[in-house]
Image 1 (cartoon, helix red, strand yellow):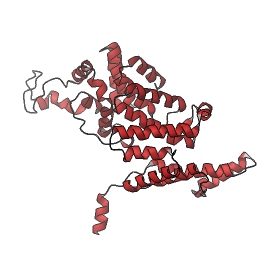
Image 2: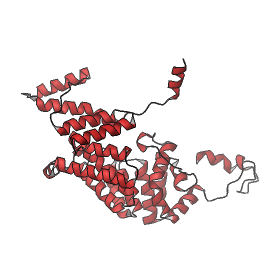
Image 3: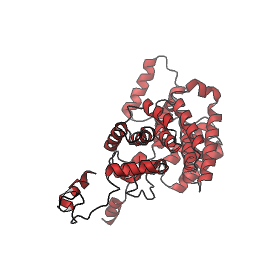
Image 4: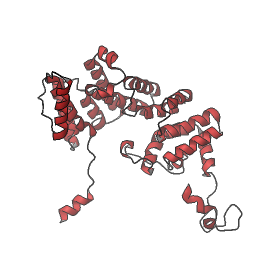
Length: 338
C-alpha cells in the first residue's frame, strides 16, 4: 500500500522523443534491404508494419549504424550516468557519431565552453558524414531524411549556445542555414531566430521573417512583432493591434516583460509547456527579456498600456480615480481582467 502511495507522488519522466526514431530507422534499413518489384509490394510491407506495430530488427552493418543504435538506447534510458556512458561508447565505435556529441553537450558539459566544443564537434562530424553533395542534393527537406536529424539537432544546439554566449551573429547564421536546409522547420528554428534578431535589434529583418510566417500565431513571434512595431512605428494603432493579438496568445507574458513579475531561474522547457499557460509565459519571457531590457522606452510603454506604472491601491483604500468608492468596488474590479 505504501509503495502505491509513493508511486502516486512521483511524476513520470517524459520520454525522450529521439528514442522513438528507432522504429523509423529500422523500417528504413529494412526497406533498403528489400528488393520490391513494385510500389504496391512496398506499400503492403508498410501496411503490415502499421497493423502489427512491430518492425523486424535489422542488425547494423556499419559502425555508423551501430553507434546510432547505441544512441537510441541512450535516449531511451532514464539514468543520466548510463546515458553518458552509452554516448561515450558510441563515440568509441564511431568518432563521427553526431548524436553522441549532442547528448554529451546536454548532459556532461560543465560550462558553456564545453557545450560549444561538443556541439561544434557534432556539427563538423555531421558535415563530414553527410558530405557536400548530400547538402546540395537534399536542401529544403532535410528533416524528412532520418540520417540528417542528428546533424540538425547538433546545429540547433550550437545556435542556442552561441546565442546564450552573446555571439548573436554566429547564432543567426546557423539558424538561417537551418531554415534553408529544412523549409518546413519541424524544429521551430524560426522562434529562436526571431529572438536573436530582436536581441540584435535587426527589426527590418525581423519584419521579413514575420511576413514569411504570417499565418503562425505563436506567442514568441507575436510578442517580438510588438517590440518591432514599437521600435519602427512607435505607439500607433498597428503596435496596439499587434499587442492585442499577442495577448490573446498568452495573457501572462506582458507582466514578465514589463518586470511586474519576476521570471526567476526558469529551468523548464518551452517544448513541454501548455500553450497560453503562465509556465509558457515564463519560458517565453526568459527568451525575450534581453531584447526588451535593451529598449527601456518599450518597457515603459508596455507598463503604461497596462497601467503597471500607476500606484496600486489596497483593496479597502479609497479608489485613486476619485469616485469615492473603495478600490475593490471600483477600478479594482478590473484587476482580474489584466
